[in-house]
Amino acid sequence: MPEPIRVLQVVPAMNAGGMETFIMNVYRAIDRQRVQFDFLYHYDMPCFYDEEISALGGRVYKLTVRQDNRLARYLRALGRFFAAHPEYRVLHGHYSGFGMFYNPAAKRAGITVRAGHSHNTGYEQGLVGFLDRCMSFFFVYGLTHRFACGQAAGRALYRGRPFTFLPNGVNAAAFLPSETARAAVRAGLGLPADALLLGHIGRFTQQKNHAFLLELFAEIARRQPRAALVLLGEGPLLEEMRQRAEALGLAGRVHFAGLQRDTRAFYSAMDGFLLPSLFEGLPVVLVEAQAAGLPCFVSDTVDPSAAFCSGVHFLPLADAGAWADAVLAAPLCRNPDALAQARAAGYDIVKTAVALQEFYLAAHAAAPERGPRP
Image (cartoon, rainbow, N blue to C red; front, top):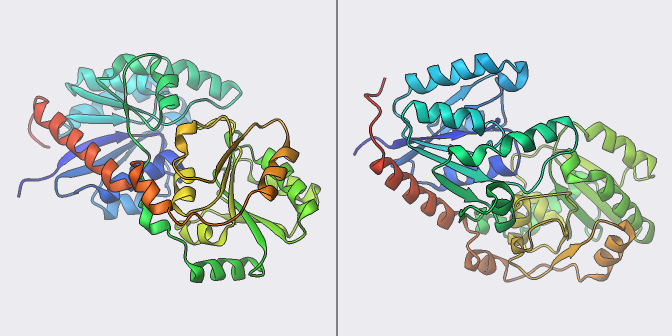
């Protein structure tokens, strides 16, 4: 059997997040005897998925530009990297901000297939977000192929240019609810079986809007004494949100569960999923929550095409009380047809992985060789 082709995935880093989860979902499902992934990071640090990437046969290369901001050093490193690795004929860039640098470097090195992927519709506020927005403007000019997780994400990044919609697929069957897992998680949190448990999964960053999330839960908690909230994730705003929860009188009712390698049991434990993000592409966690059959309460900034199941409620971010009203008025019961609906809508990872695999194989076959493997 011939060796698998190797596709270079260009990312900021492979820590836990929606974009990274999507890439790993594809990586696990793809035929790795035909296609292998390698990764080029922009941070030189240990990351959440490093060990799994290695176990799956992938290689990880780490640059330092996001830590030292030494652009000239980064450009030299890119040139040396692409020259040293003629095995790469296909590059898949998930990092739009720095695409203005790595795509031209890849082109100069003879990599003729440079795919881009849009995973979001907006940027953080502040200087870093402003710079990312400005730099991402140039991303489209170095691409030969364009992918997006949703229609809104594609329009936002590619500005009228055509793109291919590629659903953020998940292993939908793995999210079928489990009564055993539900009981175990609730016992671990110290919750009774009949408690109303709402949940959220996401990094503690401005985008995920945890401050609003805590305000709306405070409204729910005031009206529903047996309600609790579980928050999964880490991030720079974690400690600030812990303090805010205490200030709102929610100590003991908001459970900060940290970073979890396997979130499926937590979806089983929840009665409803909350996602009041300021912006999103097409969030993987919303796909997972729907596959688990959960009622979902989502900000109307999220692409409405993200809803493929019944029980997804889109709400404006203006009023936390209105969100509380919606949650408490909705029937918080599981959707028994979630798995079939996820598959029918194209959100099963097998379909996504096959589509990308066929693209990689065809693109690699059509691209010119860049020299012998080192």
